[in-house]
Every structure is written in C-alpha cells, then in structure tokens.
Image 1: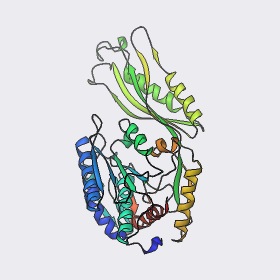
Image 2: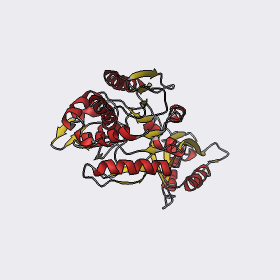
Image 3: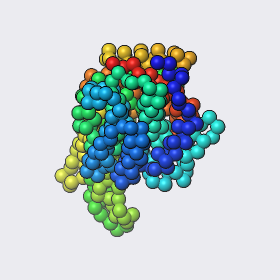
Image 4: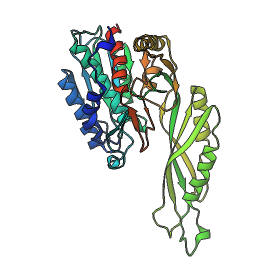
Length: 378
C-alpha cells in the first residue's frame, strides 16, 4: 500500500473539522461532551461504520464504540482510542476561534485531540475509497473524561482494549512530525483539604486558624518536594466564602508524575504522609484520586513503531519515538501489555492554553501514517 496515493487532503479535512471544534466540549459539561460524541458518531455512520451509543458514567458525557465495515467485524482488530472532552470551558471560542492562519490553524481541542481523531476516521475512509480491505477490522472507542484522569471510563477502556490486538491513540505528536509516543510517565492525582478554625476576621482574628493560610503553606511544601524522579504541582484551589470570616475549609487538587512506577509509588507515600489533624480540628488531609500507571514499551509496541517508521520513510520523514510526560489513556492499554502506539495525532503546540494550534499539513500526513498501519497490521 502506497500511502502517498491515498485520497487525503489537509484543506478538506480542516473544513470538515469545523463543526467538531465549534462544538465546545469541556469535561465538566456532560451535555456538551455528549453532543460532541454525537457529531463524531454521525461522521462514523456516514462512513459506513456500525455505531453503538454508550451512556456516560454518572456526571460525565456519553461514550461510543464503532467498527468500520469488514468481513469479520467481531474479530480482534485494531482499536482507535480517543477522547472528545477538552480542558477549555464553554466560551473559549470567543478567545480562541476556529481559524486558519497560513500554515497553521487554531481552536479549542483542535490539537488535543479532535484533529487526530478526525484524521483517524479519514484514514479508514481513504482506504475504503481505494478499495483496500484491511487485514483486521478497525474499531473505534470514544470516551468523555480523559482530561480529568479517566475516573469513569477506565474499566470500559481496559475491557474494550483486551478484545483487540493493537491500540492506536491519535493524541498530539510528541515532538512534531518526526515522532510518536511509545511510553507514558506514571501520574497520580490527589484531593487536598485544609481545615481551619472559624472566627470573625475583624473582631477576633487571632482566635481563628485560616484554612486558606494552611493551604498556601502546604502548596509551597508540596511543590518543593519536586526532584528529578518525581514532580509535584497544585493546580486547583478553592477556599473561603466571606472575606470577614476566617476560612474553615480550603480544597485543592494536586498531581505528581514520575518516569518509573516505583518513584510514583514513593511520591504517593510522601503525599499521604502529609495528613495531619490537630485537637482543635484544624489540619490538612490528602486523599489519593485517580492514578495512571507507568507505560513502558514492550516488543509489540516497538514493532508498531518500526512499522510506522517505515511508513513515514516513504513520505521522506525520519520518525523518532520516546516516552512522554502528561498522561493519556494509552497508559492503561500499554500497562496491560497490549501493543499500543500513541502520539499519532496532529503536529501542533500549546495545548491546554488559549494559543493551541496545529500545522494544517499534518492532517493528511498523520492520516497517511495511520492508514498505513491499518493497511498492514494482521
């Protein structure tokens, strides 16, 4: 299969992405995420796929699974796994509109990871259009909560992945068009609660103990624990209701990340060791939330990379690979030992910011990479 001859056009693909990007879908807005999943399912049906709607976990958007036409649709195959939730709140389009600027395009979730998901669909479409029957059926799993650590869909992901021989994840590329992801660091999330003692901030300030002050001190302590083996960061803080009251509760969320599982496990122990309550009820609590296990490449994953490297070479690209910080749902499938290749999505940068962008030409390029894998995996 010469992927260079496949009917794939970046300009056409970008225009097809417009309704995807203009349907904002932050994780914490399940109605919007479900609407986005519906748009993607409409596209799958238009391409002839059989689609199954999956009601979302409590408080989260819907999910879906699909399989493209194939003589053996129920056989273990190639699973394209993607999330359609984003970190961008409703209204981000006003500041980060879907817009092309020369060789680049912007929009919330365009790079992470709606564009890569759309490119994977187009890869399957292009193969069907030229009459190429893939050796294995191409399956799709769309989920709704990756950006908050996959608390509701991990079991679904693992169960679905176990049915298949390979997993392809069109998350953004690691270092531009010259790389894919073959491993992910381990990540743990935590819920933090600082407890204070109430008093009137104007009349009896000295009688109270501020939960906000406690949280502020703990943030400095937590982030100072960062070293080469494990990083710590606090990204969410909420505290207080009245400025004239000494705060009694302040809540936060923290994250630790490590290249090795043992280092993350030690990091978790350090975080849980911060738990402390005094007789007056003040103090600090840490509760472990969702955890992504470390994913280290096995022989199957490295074989997927070698195949992709050869496909890229036919397009004049020398493809590298490596492990990446920041989690993805590939952590779960890779940790299960299922051959998994991540970072197959679009080339771009500044994801999770108001400057997120893609390189437009990567739409066709990345679709060709995925089509080449779909065409030869058996």
